[in-house]
Amino acid sequence: MRLKKLTAVIPIALTAALLTACGSGSDGAAAQAGGTLKFGGTVPDCADPHQRGNNPNSYALKPLADSLLAQNLKTGEYLPWLATKYEVSADAKDFTFTLRDDVTFSDGEKLDAQAVADNFDGIKKLGAAASLAIGYLNDYQRSEVVSPDKVVVHFSKPNIAFLQGTATGNLAIVAPKTSAQTAEERCAKGAIGSGPFVVTKYVPSETLTYKKRKDYAWGNPLAKNQGAAHLDGLEIVNIKDTAVLAGSLLSGQIDAYSVVLPQDASRIEGAGGKVLTTTNAGYPVALVPNVKGTVFSDPAVRQAVQIGFDRKAAIDGVIGDWFHASESALSTSTVGFKSQGDALSYQPDKARTLLDDAGWKVGAGGIREKDGKKLSFDVTWDSDWNATSSVLAIVKEQLKEIGVELTINLLPTGQAASVYDSGKFSARWVNGYTPEPDTLRAILSIDANNWLERAGREKLDDLLSDQLQAVDVTKRNGILAEIQKTVIDEGYLIPIYDWAQSFAVSSKVQGAKLAYLSGPGPLYADISLSK
Image (cartoon, rainbow, N blue to C red; front, side):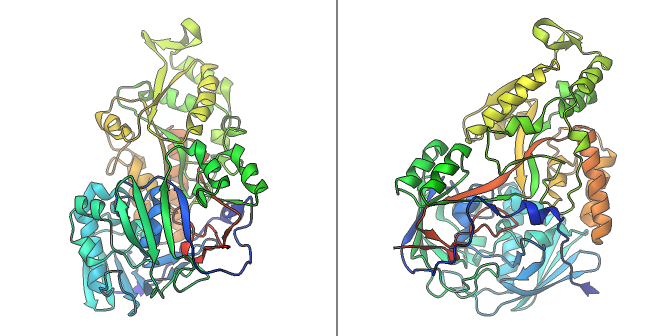
């Protein structure tokens, strides 16, 4: 087979949008050895990166496993990590990786081609339990072990998105012992990886502590420190209430945390700490309407809601200024981003006209009605970030001005999935991070998760399939531009703002930076604590 090396093309917006810091991510101080970093957050209910690769679990699980490749934040270039090189067939069906020969997992087992093959086979067996990881393995056939240091991953159809997946924590490489376990065993016992830290104690949803691997010598190419971590250990301090995280940092109970509230940033910086921020790639914080049996079955309603609220006004002063109003169905830092800013501009008069023409007349209390049915919809989610409700409250008031009623349906953590499965909701409140634009296919395509609950195939589904098979970058970006225009014009995704990471550290934390293009979390091996 003919092979060629491919690299992703990253939009220019990355240079401006990524790696912004209220405080610099590099302080130049000499690293000091020792100490345990206490990170305030939620201890995952499952310590397996293949099953819990989402934010905020990524912060807690990144230390334990490494990936085949890394990705340069500014250029999008793929860099060798566990794999020394990679090759992609001309039809993007076959991916060849040559591996380092000096890597071991924390249980002493050696990294080889069979271990990599076992990982991908294991993810396929996990199925829906590995919801993010499995998305990169569409049309996966098998992994062929060519030699101890060479593996070829075969797909039945082109899957250019897979390459990007190998640079994420979702497809981080775990030990054969972990790959052989059931989903439940992996969750309860925690994965074994080749990362710079090893789990010393794990109680699901309660306790997670790490110690450094003293023999670690294959660091992330994005890190300055390629050897053993400066820290002796890490502790994930289980704090679920985001409102108390800043106080815990300022009082010295923790050293770092993520998801900073805007009113806390100045307090942290005033105490000598830093707040690092970067815009996440993927699809924005958005509403995905249910078009089956709700008011969103009417295209005019989706289109009116799309332009019936002011995105900038909904977030200004409510969430941190590191968040930005959305411009498309993909965030500005995502591969293939194409602005749809004009189509997302605030146009209340046009929204009213759309609804008038569709037969929705203003009724009691200013809310429109049609055929005895109120123009009302709920937004259902179970996020525990308390600013979400504040943003939606502003959107609610704005939509009321055009005669649309929005009901906020915040459920206890973990309960939204069952409601979504039942179909008894009007709109999901969602956000997804990955530099790979195929994420839109994963959530919207009728051949994938079909969050829209569409009944029949449309041109959009063919476009979503075509972009996954387009090897040529220019051709693919053209298809992605058409997808974004279609999704916005049809109101199939109603974006509000681009999600951004925020990582707060105390004054004694040195060397912290947000260097990942593929998801949240710092390079822990570079971090040190001043005495």
